[in-house]
Amino acid sequence: MVTDRPDYTLPVSIIAQEIAELDVNITAADIGNLNVIIAGQVGNLDVRIAAQVGNINVNIAAQSGNVTISVNAQTVGVYLMPEWAAKTAVDKNFVGGVQLTSGGLGGGNLYTVPAGKLLFISDISFYRQTDAGNVALELTWAGDTWIVAGGTQGGSMSLTKPKTIAAGNTLAYQFRNVGATTSWFLVCIGGYEISV
Image (cartoon, rainbow, N blue to C red):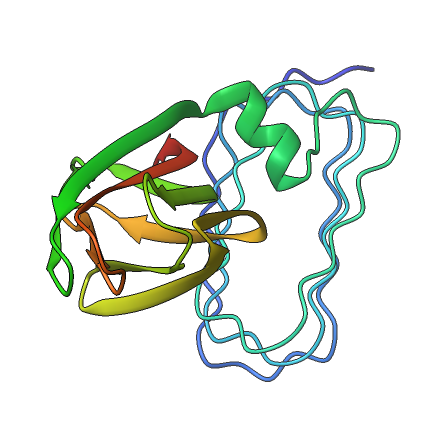
């Protein structure tokens, strides 16, 4: 005889207990939301989610060990950063220039990262318009200074590990003219920006 059981809520709270093993198996159940909060876990925490339909939201905070994620036979996308950025990020390119007399120092601001965004700098090129002297470019943001030195009349580079600039910080550049004549100095910076 089949018994019709009413819907019910069964709260379970386990606080400050020493439990060797706790197995929870929920199979073929229609559950609107299953909220699991595990705080102060010491030991192993194995989570297996099979044949999931819907969204799986995982938030791991203050982890002091290894987090191993295995995604098998799922219809989800896992991308390396460059592939992911190409799908979701907004390309950014900045150009700046300054004319300097011999011995002169100058530059300007290129971009301020807006709230809720994170900027990745992946490509840098710079040059001087006249003379065949060496060129040094100084980039600054969030109190950090990064000096990029180039060969005769300039240089360029693509970064395998992009520089990141958080929201509210301004990317600025500066050149010094060590040549004998007045010259224009130009910089072009490329990258992408994501929402955070």
